[in-house]
View 1: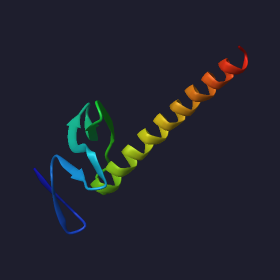
View 2: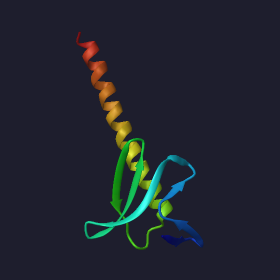
View 3: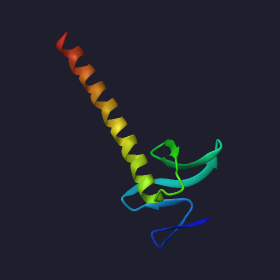
Length: 87
């Protein structure tokens, strides 16, 4: 399947050159259209609106995941340092 984004034809699945470990795909499921990202051992998905740019939607999906992972890591790191202080 091919779709057009900003006068560029993109295949489905597609990759972003700045996110080499991820593969993205536009899928129809659960009564709607979603963008799905697979990489680093996980699969994440978000709703995809008809007017969205696939490359921007893919990048923002990964950005949200990276922020979430960084927040969880910092929370874990803070918890570990607090445990060491109380020992």
